[in-house]
Image: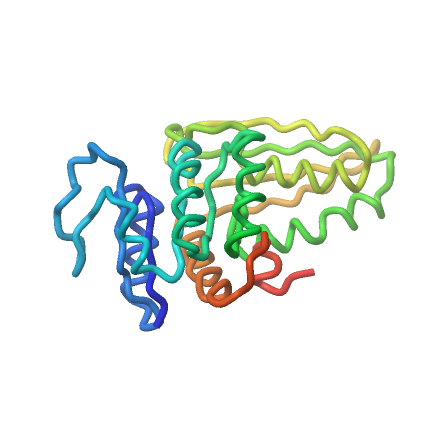
Length: 238
């Protein structure tokens, strides 16, 4: 059984990861972490109390973090200190924080991805080939839409799409971000020539998509040597 720690357990993603992990016989949740000052600290969540102390990491095998950049920066120090595997889905990280992830991955195994769904990671793998086959006569742009409370724009997934396409074409790929209502996550990649248009669209219907991917990554990374791993490696795509 994998002893699981979850950061931001009172947030939308953290709570869903917690709920789905409770239904999975492969996991025992040993740390439900929240930032200091959160009203729920000390209260029972299932069979465990919500804590603000990272010292609980000594009871954990794998730590899952889908929080925000400032919290993730601190959590990277904690997993390095306690030598715990990390599954990281936080987006909006700056260059310094991204560099810190690389540094920590030399100490512990880290699965890091802006999106942990199967469909999106298949797109990460095949988009460069599509762009190369279409050639330079086709312009490419990305449109992404998320709920109105999402803090980062454009999304980490859209940035990754743009990166893999830029690497394949040598061109900067424009991104258009929409923040409306309760949209979980829509991404559309548009290839447009003079007489035709191809659109590849991924829509997330539920946060369960990402939570289940995180739990799959947690099972995969258990026992791996230090290193920075992608979700494509977890899913054996590409």
